[in-house]
Length: 417
Ligand SMILES: [Zn+2]
Image 1: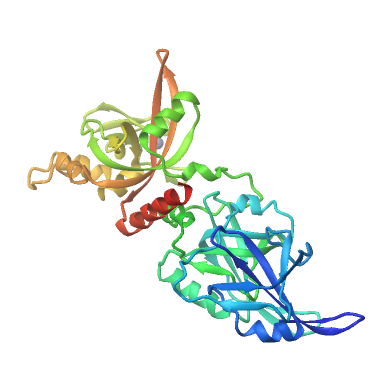
Image 2: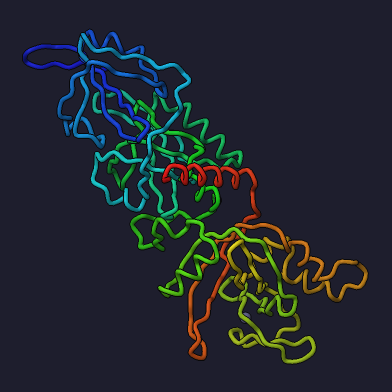
């Protein structure tokens, strides 16, 4: 409820936004005693039928909804709350990728969804009139890999900021869906959470699934640097057949997620040998060649080494319901997949005291489901086009997340038929 003062009169005004089953939205505004009448009766998430209202052109200054009309309630209007058995629907949010929001003009209202990646401590800001206000900045990051600040002001969002911080600190993966909030600029773009606080924590909506599948770990990229840019669709899940088909018509490099069963892992040459020496303060890791028994040569350090290191180079056959392909996984993914370092796996073949063999370790993960983030590209070898597939991220299938993903996919199919 706001007070207004014009030359002619003073009064109060109150607005709320409604959305119907088709996702069309419109603002309803009431003035003075009508505002007084309805202000405490309108509840977020409830269903209403409006009769005998009047319609006018929407003010483009105050009303940024996607509707050029606006509803005004008068003395004769009826605002009736529906029975609770009306089917629930939600406004169809149109999430803007953060990289696009960063180039949006100030005061634009946006819908954004992202993973909380950082919290700042509460800041106390002194206003011009000497009063103070508290603010906490939360950083979120989305599939565009860009990060934006979300400003939580108190009141009312201090408690919310604390709750989010506790969830984040306890290792809970927090996704924030923000609806219809304003973009601003102060040392970089930010989104202000307004007093109406239109956002949701860990929403069960389709758009949250790529973030859930991706997991919380991705480096924050400074929006001002020219970081790696991903378009919206690149992380969407694809089937193997659709990857093969897309690359057969359009050779390109593609990063996507696939849900697969691990069909086979080659046991011969699952590793390569590297240099364990220090180079510029870090492990050298350069591929080194064998000179003889207990003797290796690093081409970078130009040193003979009595014992080399081992890193994974796994060659795996991935299968889904549509097709199969061969993919490579390097040390980080291999270690995560097998829960054993390449050196430990290599040594197993010489350890005759235990029953485990490299093959038995590899067999343990075979025929299990994974979500892999893969980088797929094509190259030509002997005038034949071949596929190069590298697994960049491995995630064992989380059945709860997967069920939500499938349910959302099914309801989306229903919506389009
Ligand atoms: Zn070296």
